[in-house]
View 1: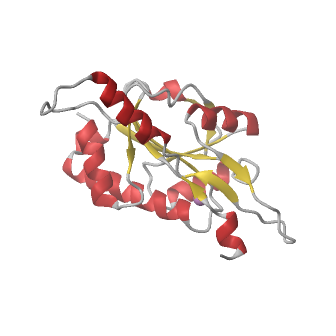
View 2: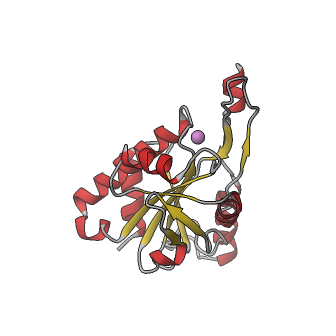
Length: 206
Ligand code: NI
């Protein structure tokens, strides 16, 4: 309707659900049998990246091998969706951690910027620390960020620059839960709320 709403569209890719349902069909599971495969099992999502954390240290995806990961791409200057999603994610993680404190230590939430032009390591650090000390903020060169976003099938593009120099980013707002090997398990329902997010984390971790 207005300019801002038009420019700030967040895209949710429907393809994963489609792929997951196709995968289930092709498994030929007899009707009535319980299907326990994670929704994103076997999807080629996630992959190697090299980024920089808020302390300026190089961080690789493989640094988290052995841990589950929650991965969300967004940007610190996002006026609405990213802060809402990240707040729900961290609240969901905290609920899960209350119920499963030891297991929660094995789940690493991370926020990866798709706006490296403005989201310096300091800006990313300020953004993530406003939500949770557990949340790692990552940025990098435009090339490093592109590599990471592509690996997670995340779309982003820069909107028109206003007279004041500000701009919005169009981007996918998908929160992934990844396994201890870095492979995808499920998306987390950031459109719902902390209870649903905590339940989904609990469902696929052990
Ligand atoms: Ni956003």
